[in-house]
Length: 487
Image (cartoon, rainbow, N blue to C red; front, side):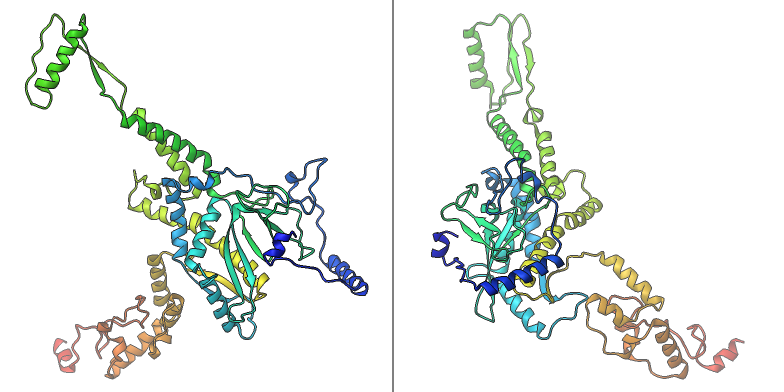
């Protein structure tokens, strides 16, 4: 590391090692390598050309256009980013134990500490601004954030968002030596090569680099703005041409007057402008021949409006969202709109949110803090059809599959305090029938005006139809004499 790193407090001087300790460390390292098999294939072979292989200390930068960030300030690109970023910021989240694993004692306290650290990642950011920057950088090309430990047990970690475009990567880093830098942040546009002055090196657990659309071709990934870069450029060019053409438009018609001198043409123009135009007067013309009307091909076709609509659809496709989110609402009805909203959530919003959650879990909670029994999870990621779920629960209740309290537990509602909440519909029906036949008063929870219906969303126990002591038919009177009289 350079003197700039030491000046910034990032130096990691290595203390002299005892030869005996070195030998023991080497012995344990060999034992660990036996348990951990070595990789035989090339790491990012495209960065290892024949005759000029990369070395361990050589960092590579992501070749992106300088105006990539500027494109995010254009109308449709900004709208596409906000369609994904804003819903993720509004999502609730929680720190909870990892599924299928018993948490260690004191996990509630550690979950509270992790929640506080994420809600206040540093002195200038909240969780909302922090995740907004991550999502935006992720869609542009790559997201990144720095994480450093502190001596405060109530706030053990601090995090700062980092411009992923300025981060270079050591592609041959394998993780065998944890003290070997994995990333190098350089000032400017991030395209400087080598160990530049002012560059800051980070270990693997000090900087989190979130790759969009990862592949084995390069260590950087590719963002949605990169994919739509050419399309956005085409749209800006056509839009500028159409704007100039519309701002300097000319009439669609012209008059051709045969054998007309310039003086006569000027007289006709003055006559029209001074006597006819704007006055509502009827014009009179005379001459040997009628004038010929010439038609110019002006209009929407010359503005390339359909081509620009197609480019907008292509931009929407690059971000994985529906074109109606970018203002193209032709041929959209209620059914197609609902389908598009669900598709946007599953193909655009949910994958980005899950990618960020995975990196927070693996790199921050598990690797940096060592809390492998906890995980970060967004709440409400799995959107469900509420009407379909209500119908399914109603079928379960009516067919004695679930009790009302079991349904309420699935919906996240507190259980009923009544004993009927833990009984199946058949048991409630039998108890209600027996109470009516014996002349006992019904529990108020089973009265129809209390809203206790089979399968209702309230989760109450189902009520029975109106019955009497003589068998359940309301047409039969309760008085035995009335019954005999009918006979």
